[in-house]
Image (cartoon, rainbow, N blue to C red; front, side, top):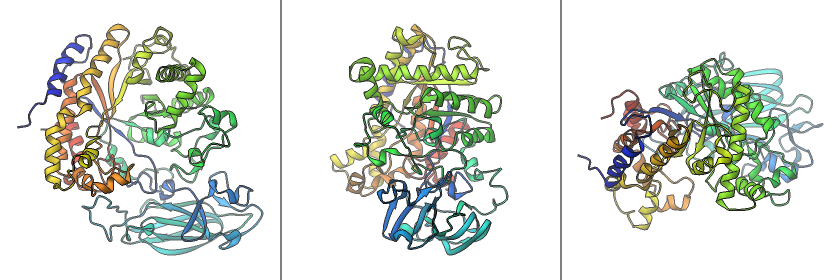
Length: 585
C-alpha cells in the first residue's frame, strides 16, 4: 500500500481551514482539460491534414550542408529574395532556377517519419501515415518533395493549379532525411510558386472544410476544455499590432515561420534597440485565431487563449471581437495575459521589468508585478466591453457570461491592493503544477546514473508525496481561499498539471549525462500510478476546479508519444482517460 507522506497530511490539515470560507466541497472531482501542443515540423501529433501548416521557416543555401533562415539572412536584406503576402519566397523581377544568386533552392521542413528504422518502444519513434499524399500548388516552376519516407518526386508547376500524387512508404533513418522536405528549385518572376499544400491520404477533397486530422480530434475529444497557449505562441512574441498576427492564408502555423518588424519604440519597450536586438528574438509564428475558434466549434468545447504581452489596446479589441463573433453561442472564452510572467526565459518577464521600472520607478519584482496587474486589468476590461459586460456586472458564476479571466498566483497579493482590486474581477487564480522537475538533476548530483530504470522509478515513487510542488499546494490553496473570503470568490486552477519526469530537452548536456534514462523512466508502466496519485492530491485539495495538462505532445511534456500509440502503452494518457471515466483506482 502506498504510504501517506507528510506533505499530503499537511495538505489535508490546511485545506480543511481554507475550505471554511471556500464553497468548493472537499473531495470533489475536477474537470480534466488539455493544453494543445504548439505547431512544428518535429511535433509528433498530426494537428492538420495539410502537412504544410506545420512547416518550418524557409531557408536558402548554396549546397545541402549550408542553410540560412531566409528572413534573417543579411545577404538578402536588399530585397533579392522576399516573401509574398502568404510567406512564399521568390525573387522580384527575375526568374529563379537552382544556382541563381548562389541558391541551391528554397527549402522548408515538414513532418516526416522514421518507422522504418525505429521501434515503437523508442522515445523518438515518429510514424506518419503511408499511402498517396496530394501535392497542390499554384504558379510556374518546379517543386521537389523528398525525405520523411516519401519517394523523391519532382513536380513541374505549369501555372494555375497543379495537383500531383506523392507516394509515401515506410519512414527513413533518424537524420535530416527523417523530415519531409519541400524544395522550390525553379520559380517564374511573374508567376512564382506559391500556395503549396501537402495533404495526407484520404483528405484531398475535404482539407479546406475539415482541416483538422481526425486522429488529432479523437485524441483531444475526451477533454473538457483546451488551453491554446502554445498555439498563441506568446512566450517569445514581441508583436504589438493587429496587422502583425498570423492570418489563415499564411503558409505555416508553426513558430518560427515569420519575422516581426518592430519600430525602435517597440524594441525599447522590452529594453532593446535596432543595434542590440538578436535576430532570433524577432522570430514569430502562431495558429490564426480563426482556426482556434474553428477548433472550439468543431468539438463543441470551450477554449483558453493567451494575449501577447506587448499587444496594444486595438489588438485586444480586435481579438475579442473576432472570438465574440466567430465562436458559436454557448462557447466560453478564457483569457490570459501572456504566460508564466515569472519565467525569466520568456520575453514577457523582460518586458515587465522594463515597464515596471518606467511606470513605478523601480521596486524590482514589486514594480514588475504592479505593471503586470495593471496591464492585465486593462486588457480584461477591454474584452469585457467588447462582449457587452461592464467590469462590475454579471456574477462570476453566471452561465450566460461568455468570457473568463485568469490571474497568476504570483500576482494575487498585488491584485488585492486597493489600486487594482476593483479594476476588473478575475475568475481563476492559476499555477503550473509540475512534479519531479528536479529529479533528473538529482540523478546526476547524487550519482544515480548507474541504477536501473526500475530502481530509479521506485526511488522517486517513494519521494513523490514530498516533492516541493506537492508540499506547496496547501499554502497556495489557503492563500486563494483567504483572498476569496476577504474580496470575491476566485477558483484555483492548475493550468499545467503534469510531470517533468522526462528527457531534458532544454539541457542537452544534462540529458546526455543521464544516458537518456529519464526518457525510459517517462514511459515506465508505473508512471500511471504517479498520475493517479497526483490527481488524488489535487482532488483532495478541494479548491481545484480545472486541471490543465498536455495530452498529446510527442515526447517531452507529452501524454501520448505519437498519435496512434496503443492505449495500454500510453500510461499518462490512459491515467487521464481513466480519471475522466471514473475508472482510476
